[in-house]
Length: 126
Image 1 (tube, helix red, strand yellow):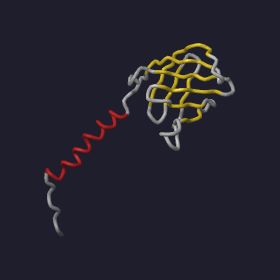
Image 2 (spheres, rainbow, N blue to C red; image 1 turned 45 degrees about the vertical axis):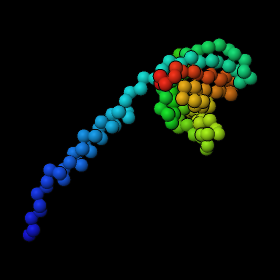
Image 3 (cartoon, rainbow, N blue to C red; image 1 turned 120 degrees about the vertical axis):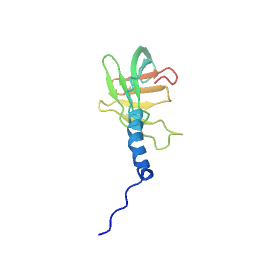
Image 4 (cartoon, rainbow, N blue to C red; image 1 turned 90 degrees about the horizontal axis):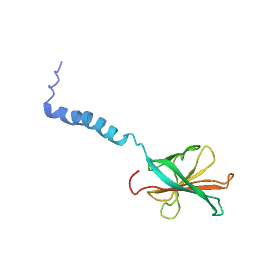
């Protein structure tokens, strides 16, 4: 029977480095994002201003979460067939159309309630 060659320290380095680096990378990517309080403008779909509101936006790039006093929405995965031409959008479980207008602007629209809320957040704060 042939004996296996003993492992060299240099053979263990890639595996050890991966075991150390993986948890660090995962913890950095999954850090708790508390979001940012953003100013919202409430309008009818025809553009009549109804007032202002505040909402907490948690931006996850492919989706976002809106929390207000009486409303909590999760956009779900935003989609656009061509992000250069069309706004990334999704429909929430509650029937709102959620849109990412820019890195700092988000809107939620509910046709049945004749309501649109456009949130403007501080630059790169979310």
